Image 1: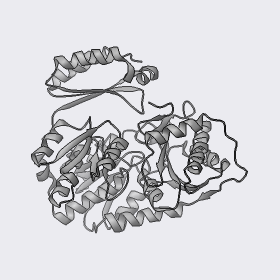
Image 2: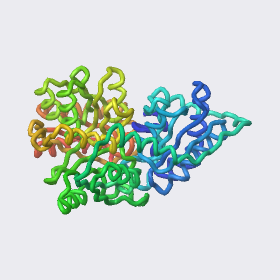
Image 3: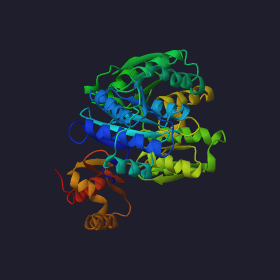
Image 4: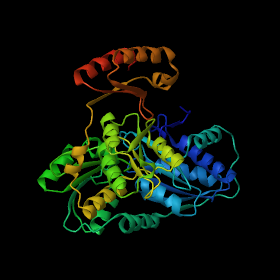
Length: 439
């Protein structure tokens, strides 16, 4: 792990390990980076609904301004909007102020390059070098510009390039009090859908709390109550999508990946007959793809890792079980609203029965737990050779089980995932937990 950046940007508890001064220095460092690489001296900044969003937005903007780069503040938008606009406008980079699916007391800073992709590890290393460096502000200051009008370009893109006529379609939506609290309803209604929308106020103090992609119980209730064909749940920055069908069945990222992969395969749009998943992708999903003649390539956890693998090999589809899905022909990042529209378009235009299609997907029982640990233990996990050896010893005695143990890149937890018999999985998890230094 880097000093400041994790698996998805910088993230932390506000005013503890993420504050005004760090955000200002990120802005400063991004400005230095932009000038060194001769990028356009302008940056788009979006945010989710968290109470700390304004503080961090203007801290980054002040850092950019002090070092001669303009900021275009576009307000509360999903991460997909910042990525899209960064790739379409003459800017040097984009910044998204969000802690994604994390708790309301946390926030974060995602950096996006001028092609719409998240900064790679080498770029983040360079930014970190500038954060800790002593650089003199420039005489010519950058401007801070209110630019919420730019968001309409993203809305038009979704409606014209991805969406279809949804007249007569009943849809329930849970925006998790987050980034899509305005745009989701606007887009679905613009496409003529009948919309039931919940948790769509800008209540940053409630973001992700027992709602959205992390908890779909209320959405399931609304889908059944209003006889909706679909329910869509987003997380705080709307890069995760979880789907509820009319019978209450919940589709996670693996299910959605299988549906999209099958469609692209049947329409000769699946390059190399390959999709990208992660070490957490269900083994059953991999085997089900194999029966279709499709290969699943795994990466480390993190949508950035998925997208980097896609870019390296010109793959067009990838995703995570958590609901991150990227369709490279549509956007450069995981965009939950875009993916919901794309799924609807496929179902409607191809007259697909999802329940019938998903009969071809057989998943293995997967048991996952998060174990709270100290930050020191989490950061040292990857170099703890004794721990690695002890875990390998356990894995050797359960060779019929697929076992993944990894530190979270965004929280002080170790995630343990075991695939196979549920009672045996619990046995494995308890043995691994005894090896961890918990809090």
